Image (tube, rainbow, N blue to C red; front, side, top):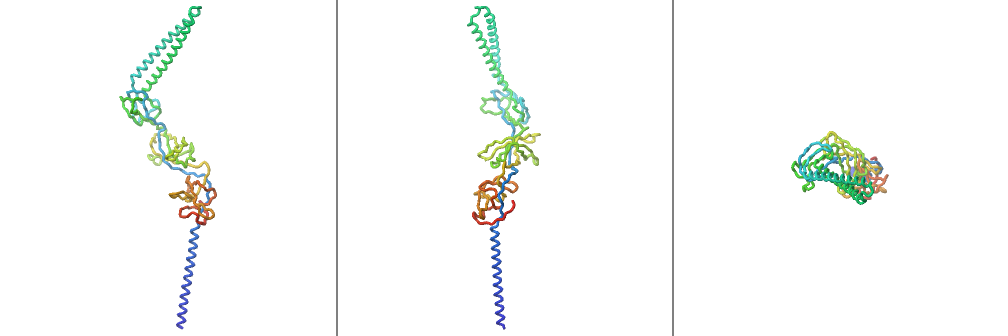
Length: 371
């Protein structure tokens, strides 16, 4: 009896052990199958067409609408300077007065020549008129005398015209002794003082003043090459400056260069800004918010579908159930979507989340999801 009990207990233990091993084996097989299924099932999306757009935030620089250095046009000495740094000036205002005695002497000489040629022409005309009266009497005046008198009048007239031209030129040179503002603006720099020699003969070529127009400014912005197709004239923008936090200023694109800088790979655009209250100043940096969009539709995918490594930028397209790395270039990004360019087309299936851990040609199982 005791022997039978021992045999029964041993059989029971063996049965339980076998059953436990079978159960564990089945569970491990089941987990392996589930794990394998999880490895090959990936969310995927269809490549679609859309009109992408985004608010591009890029830095810009405010500049004077007009800005120039003031140089004298004639050799002279500064007699008086009427304005200084910070003074607001208007177009045509006299900024400085120069003196050049030799120019005054040349003007007087030119005026004397004009008066001399006027007197000669008056005398020539009088002689010619008297000869015309005398010619009414047959044989009183020879034809040669008439021709000489007529030629004298013409020569004296031309001499007077030349003298007048020289006199006007000297008058123009004298006017250069009064330095005038070329436009409304503000004096931002003064280099010289009364008594200094200035003019084209001055080898140092130091400007007398620097003047900037501040009532109107230019905001220059360099647009990256990939966004140039989205830029249009009269396009509205907004911008802010560090010195006025929390305040936004508005403007429109007035000029587009239509030229890509080779070094920066960007296109320069210009916004005209009315500087009310002179709150903005040339030289300020601005943070520009520029809404950009394509003129037509293009291909877009979720931003997570584009993977960028040190070597390439790609999406993983599913071709016949296998992963295929497709090199693309990124365009605009907005709202979790990225514009792509490359050998893909509308309706292609790509993995929603791409990474370089999925090797080329790996069989994958996908399930479609929304962007």
